[in-house]
Length: 253
Length: 280
Image 1 (cartoon, one colour):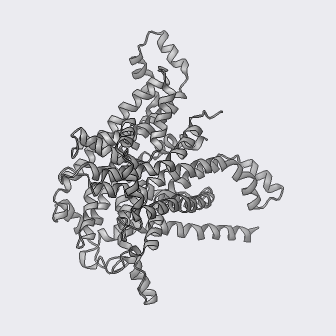
Image 2 (cartoon, helix red, strand yellow):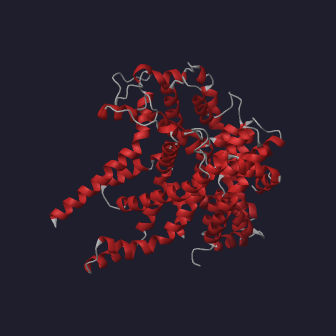
Image 3 (tube, chains in turn brown, blue):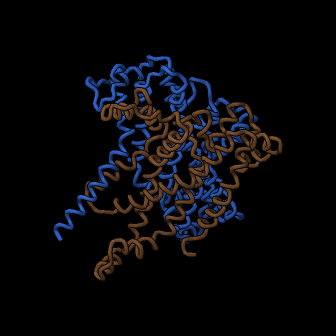
């Protein structure tokens, strides 16, 4: 595992490839997209996960059944489902635009041909795929909170919001933070949601660093590919270091 | 109070319905395509007029030039997934046993390194991995993909197994050693049986990881007979006149085994794999 990392830095030693890289207009856009992905998309995802974990802790038979279905996006491989999204969004015959036409008699947008719409759709696909996992983890965290705390609070007349603010949130805050950071790291490396949905297009405007590296590799520009990855490291490594510090401590410390 | 209850239930249902729709829509859409005849697949209906299984039979009989090697690609996916699972288990069990039970020096450092490499996204390691496989002359072989996947799966596997084995009481080892057990006997007779649930979880994790992998599979292999189904699905994108209904049928077949494995081993997956993440 160390070998590919070290070898990678060795391949990326030429300063010229960085100059070339910074002059590629695609690169700037990819950096911006990457930052948007790990800030906006991850936080939207976690706000949803926090909200939905509150929904899934309710003890109802139908909610338990729904939870089993809800995990499906996580359990099935991403390629077929992302391709399914892609066909749904096809402007001419995709089901989304067909439905829009049926109800409004207007043409729907050209989903994957506008850079911001396409990029938002990639974010949506990413959320669709990874939301179940994080929701489930937060549910586990919420279930670990002793029940009697809520009962005592209810007796004292605390509102739902107060219960959340003073019981739930302090108990799961650490977990929430840890998960958000892990998710940011993984989102940095999310290749599939972008590559399979938009292919980086239209005109290479929706790349993130992970797909940009592979794009250079496909164009046989290995030095540029490696330079892209090295540029991503200042984003990745501090988060990784932080996580290792956090997790390698024992549970009691 | 009763009015309040009704309102609460209504709220829950109002959340539940969009959640169900949002989750199922792309999967249902895939299913819908795969049972629609070619002409009506694009009609934008929510249920086809004449549902059919002919798409599946076309896939199974390889009746399209995109599907010429369907069985061989499926076989490739199976071989790579199970080889990755088996090798990962061997590597990770050995490492975890050595670090946790035999207390090899530098174990903590190895653990931290394992953890760090686990968190570095695989997409960033793909390029150096590609070059490394090239310099070993392994490009375009199944071996390359299997080795790459074992490399990706091991750090996490080692970490989870080490966490699990730290929980086994050390007195067990001491008792076994008092009775004259060697390190290997300790591994085989005491350690492995007790670790079984975690081993199942890790094996499943590695198998699913390898089966689902797209990026490494398409970088490391290109021979059409040996690529995995995942890459074959990606190839459909290259042409404008792709038979989408066949693609969705193939995708459906491809998605079934991991979903089935996931639900079958869910008990192990949830306890074994979330333990580490939830703890802190």
